[in-house]
Length: 116
Image (cartoon, rainbow, N blue to C red; front, side, top):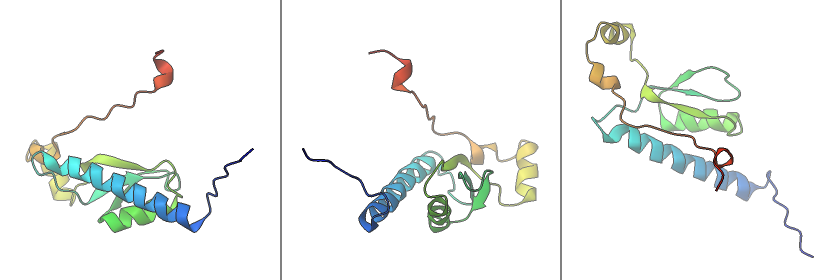
């Protein structure tokens, strides 16, 4: 009888995991920028270790924070972060609303909730 064991601390698993997360980030950011050319950064993210939203300014910084959280409970905000207080104030006053217009809808559907 063969037993398959996955070594989660092996170098190849860690490299593969980082590569998969990086590919996923690239896919998401491409979706965000497709419609109306939404800017990508700065953007808020959250991880298990940050426990709150933090602003990142590059893909590299995002991947670094995800790695520090061991890729657990990592989230990317669909909306870009404000560049400064003046931009936030303009948005609240109805100026440049299209900068933050939603262009994608994510649904999380669990198969456990829907019998086949």
